[in-house]
Image (cartoon, rainbow, N blue to C red; front, side):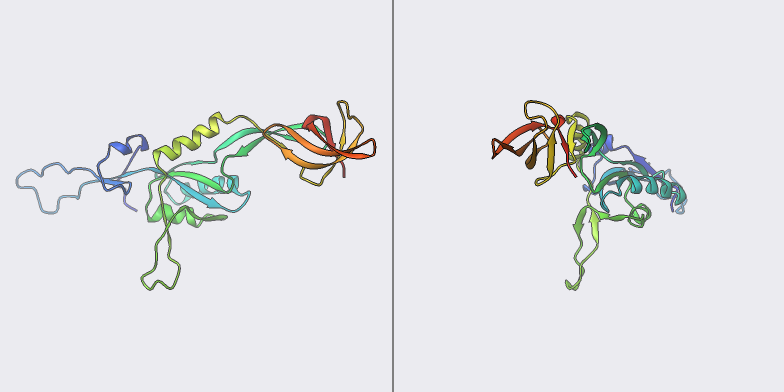
Length: 232
């Protein structure tokens, strides 16, 4: 593992001339006259970029913690710089009607890693338990008969800005432990003590529609999440 690697901040990546691969060579200083032919090669400067990594369902936090530890153990923590799970605040309505503060993942099943891409860092990420693969393009094998390897694709600055802006600005998500067909009891409002069946759930509006038996007829009624409780 070469020690002559300098990491360039992603903020400066657009100012680096190159072929778009995320790597750039620094311009070597002119060699003085009479310099020995064995002079050291110029230092290679590599750009740290954001990559999306697909992980097993509900394992985002586990992957983040494990990869942070592995980066230190494998000596690549100077190139695996950040591991993020973009989240936005949310509120979950429990079965008993109580509210619980939660963190809602913006992209479930993915973590974002800011890293210098090389063989060592790719191995560290890919071999982490519960990691499926990088998001990227598939390299076809020469024979064309077998699936190739995934070539990680760095996220653009616009994609990164959009993801983190969404996480920072998105309004709290209201989730309810209800689905169509569930039986509910109305606990507040003009239909208190009525029972019914859920026919539609609208988390964005914090409301649902249920069929209530009113005067012997099933009637669709819109209710607030706070007005109902789920029946077993």
